[in-house]
Image 1 (cartoon, rainbow over the protein chains, first blue to last red):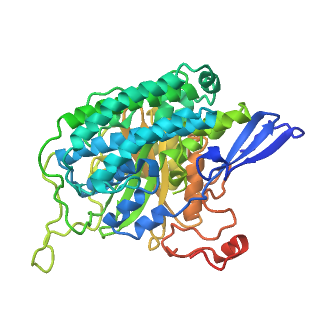
Image 2 (spheres, helix red, strand yellow):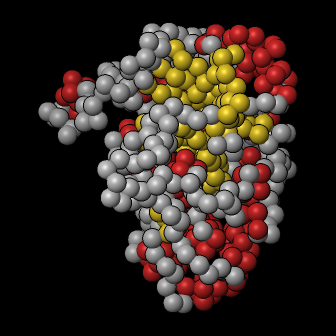
Image 3 (cartoon, rainbow over the protein chains, first blue to last red):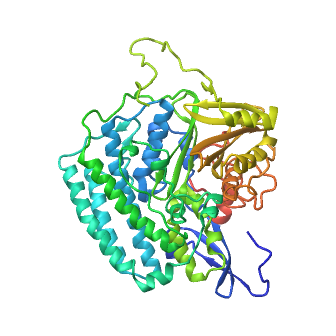
Length: 370
Length: 192
């Protein structure tokens, strides 16, 4: 990490975190500074390490499912979807159409909820106090929908291997539709507060630039990759859970700075609403659970299955030895890989921009540390 | 996959299930241009090119992995290293299996490169080819104790630097921890 270009005489080492409010949890960044200029940012992570992958080897396939919700806990539904899809692939089972559509609805609602947390806290970091109250108000309604569906708000464990545990409740469609109608106007409100705001633009434009080439080199995915102009989304590139049946666009940015990422995520929320509207308008009838044995013992084999989580490519590499417990569960967390590019983005910028860049990567330390 | 879900038949009364799943991975040969090119270029350093459930993977000798990944990046468009991880098979002589997941944006294709190494072997790093391997290889070192030769910063990443033990090795019990470190740094007898 230490570059030979550091000016020994003026280099100042500043420790930021792990208790700094704008590091979104327990991230510690060791900054090397030349005056106010950042010469390097070394991340120290692992404060939340719980050994999720080890736990996976010591639980049965079903028992491990609730654990994955505790990684990216603001997008628990996406985590669960990725895990269920991976085990289903190992078993060569596919969830029935009805379950797939319900999965899409809940996953997209969760994407909105995750982006709302990002927007609120990111704006708060930059100094705009208002949006966080608005975004948490709308997120509350999403969590209420989850709660009414499966009883949990945050770590939902909404899906089961092979489909869904619960049938939809009466009034689910109306409630989701009402949310969509309300939410589109609310996105307009957020944009009225921020998009053309002089201070917002000045704080975000040309900060933390990561071009398409660097994104690929550092394995950066999700909104960061799209903000750099690469039109790549796993929901389109390698559709899963029936995403190929929905009509939506992949928003992209141009230069890959923090403002482009803001624009991309705002557009993604609108696209998610679009998907939810299509899905909720015709939920097919039928069973919600595929034929899955009570005791899951996949044949000997291995699969890598990934989905487009709100933060990027979330992959599960699961190896089965034919027993009831996975031989190995590897989680490819988007936050962990994206965070690695912090040093690249921060170099040459100012100390105050570090807060913007950490906010714009949208990390969840539960997923970085696992 | 629209066909009938293939689950093993459930024995209702029968003592033993009739059709037992095979004890090895039921792979099929992967016959395309890419594996042929790889075999031509790397010869017997490529041990296997197969498909499992439609997913492609290549098994190679440890010394061939870094050149293969470099070749795939520059000649075949596999410009995104998705993941690096490992598995531990304590009963094998070459106990660790290292797995690289690669993706190509231009071909929209994913492949895995796998290799087996004995304990103490130092595979070559791929950081010069894919900078993203930096943290991923550090995590493999942290969890399995596999050191990558030529890595710019081969330190632990999730656990503290002075921690002893590599938790994802199979002999490492799930409740084991480094008591010495916990005592010295947290001032308590045990974190359990």
